[in-house]
Image (cartoon, rainbow, N blue to C red; front, side, top):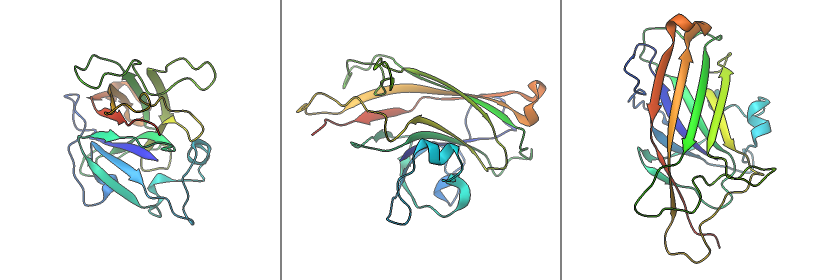
Length: 202
């Protein structure tokens, strides 16, 4: 499982995600984290996450910090690929279980190097067409964060052409619309533009 970890500060109104760098990996904003699977704590599925069997915030899992503001290299058979958004623990406003967050992820753009033939590494699981835009929404509930899954264990990943000597690089943008206490009057917007590398298969 790979997870882009982003923090939002409810006090911020300039559109930027928080740059908070806490001592724990789950409190580091704009970091890619890789789940460290074990026999007792195996790779989760989207059903495990959505159904509450696998809780990112419960403190029982180990996360490897891939790095801040990096283009993560997604290995073959990566498992779940997700984006996690957490309230900044230093903010003054107290998060509420009814806080609503909508996430928009859009792949695209032209890169001079490592440009793949498709805009996204994610094909639709049914049609096979490239999925370049994700629009996801959920309430916070009792969890410490929102976790949005882009690809599950069973979803194929479009790899770079076999034998190619470099990674396919994907540019994408993440936008979040937050309604604290589900109130339009308190609406906040945040944006970021990470990157993702997919290596050759085989």
